[in-house]
View 1 (cartoon, one colour):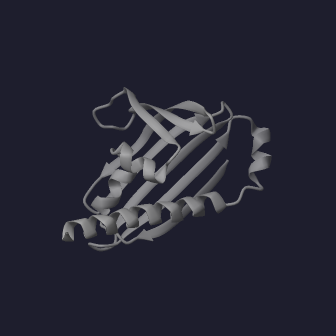
View 2: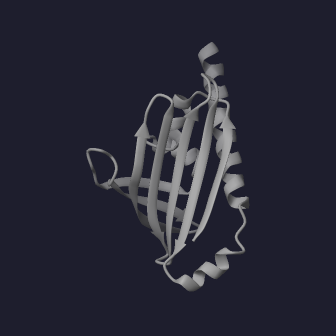
Length: 158
C-alpha cells in the first residue's frame, strides 16, 4: 500500500472551492479534465455509500469506473469527500479531498491518495513511486480554482 498526503492553500472562500470536488461536473472537469461523465447508479440518503459510474477519457478510450463515496462532510468550516474505486482490476484507489476554512478568503486543501494493490507483488513497484503527480495535481487545482475565482470577481465588477 502506498499513501500520499499533501496540502496547499487556495486563495478562495471554502464555498467557492467545494463544487470543484463535489456536485458540479462542469467545475470538476476543470481540475479533472479526463472525467467525461458521472451517473449515479445507487443513491444513498446520507450520500455515504452512493455509487457513481464515472467515465474517464484515457487517450482514445473511455474507461468506466464504479466509484463509491466513503466519506462526506459539508459543514461551514470543513468539507470532505472520500471516494474509492478499483483501477484496472489491480489496485484499490481511495482518494480524499478535504477543505478547511482558514479565513473568509483562504481555504486549506488537503489531498490524500491511497493505492492498495490487489496482488501483494505489485507493492514492490510502489516503493519507487514519487509524489510528483500529487504535487502537480495540487498546483493545477489551485491555478484553475483561483483563476475562476478571479474571473468571477472581475465579472461581478462589470
